[in-house]
Each structure stands twice: as structure tokens, then as C-alpha cells.
Image 1 (cartoon, rainbow, N blue to C red):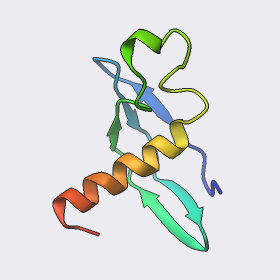
Image 2: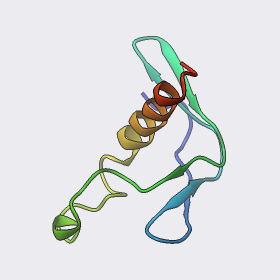
Image 3: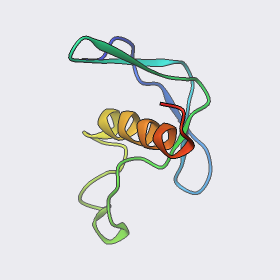
Image 4: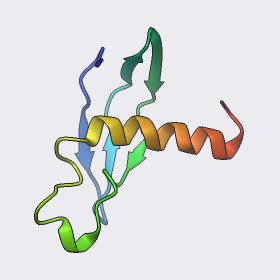
Length: 77
């Protein structure tokens, strides 16, 4: 469940930057993605982006998943 609104600003190469901290709650745990986080949206093959917008319906889940993936790769979880 969203606790704050996801505010993204497009930058270059199809990427966007998070303008404010984003807080999402899952099973009672609050996940905070910090301002300045850069995303390229949901993983949608380029050939299907006309049908499924990478910044559409699933962008919230994509931002949470990508930020957690980045944390686990860097050993910061």
C-alpha cells in the first residue's frame, strides 16, 4: 500500500528520477525509496512499449522491486 505519492520526473534515455522519498508498505513493513533514485520503469521489451507503458500501471511495483534488487546486489539489505 502506498503511503506517499510516487513523483517522477523524466530525465534522459527513457529514465526518470524520484523527486521525493517514496514510502510503500508491504505486510506491515515500510519500504522507503529515497529522493534521487533513478529508474527506467517497468521491464517491458522495447517492441511492446507501444502497448505496455513502462511508466504505466506497474511503475510503483517496478520502483520498489528495482530499489530492493539494487540494495541486495550491493549488500545493503
